[in-house]
Length: 188
Length: 188
DNA sequence: CCTTTCAGTCTACGTGTGTTGACTGAAATC
DNA sequence: GATTTCAGTCAACACACGTAGACTGAAAGG
Image (cartoon, rainbow over all chains, first blue to last red; front, top):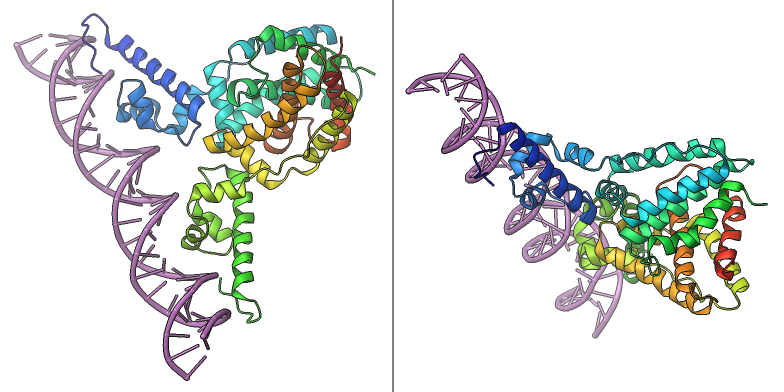
């Protein structure tokens, strides 16, 4: 796809092309997973060329690593109630629209070990941080269940499209929110 | 792998070979997903030959379909409390050891559409059945959240190995059980 | 205006894959 | 014992993929 406008400089031209490639890669990796996404398909979706993708990103692995980097949630701290509130807010956002990069990483993690490492790192880091601040002997376990519920909701809604999870984020959180609160408090 | 014992009949010989292939397929599909599992690798793991796998199962797709057929849970019926009890028991079993076929289907579902259909069918069928018996306007939503929690726990434990989910099934269910019960009852 | 740089294109190579079909020898059948 | 069947083996095909490298033409720089 040769630019026809003569006003764009070479530098911004390259930046735009890279961005188009990354966007196409995120979408295709997110829809089809790592193995079924070919560099040729990414290039075509970006209106570009496979050779160019290689020149810019080095390899399919490196392209994936750049496309599927998960933006970290902010730090979650405070009392159990505050933590529950922050988790609920973060999960509401994830249910509304999970970033394409995270969806790509999540779908690919089941077949691509590096994607698995990416997701696990993003999740366990947050879990450990939370577990340290929750009361009770089984804090690690409860924060694990919070993580599982989050994972199940995001995967069930965006990737598997489970029955009943296509409601609005607010309706979903009206059910899931109290559960997270209980798990944070350690109901007894 | 030519049988050396002369006492086995041809019929049972074939049955045993097919079973070895299926077992190897389940394990490899479960470990590496659909695309990264090659017929050659399955054949070798089964001590057999790729051509023979093709002759017996027709194609990679059909082999996968046979290897990754999810054994259905029994019907879940009764009062909300009984339903919660049956769900808890079923989930405890899944956490203790999920059958290899189901794990293969779950790992593959994120890249192989037919596997996705298999898992979705197994889950939504049960969810609908449960939702019909639960009280409240949001029964479908709540049974969806139950499904998401189940999915998250099974995937988090067996596939992703999330922090805190490596506890015993009983410890996990001590936390997750009450949640399922609440969701079944429709806490107000 | 001449040279250099570089975005973009095209072709080709090597490899691994699913799949096919011919072949072999032992079990089954008569 | 002769013939048929069939489990198991082997070699090869066709294709798609990641990747490498040569090439083209316009922008950048002097």
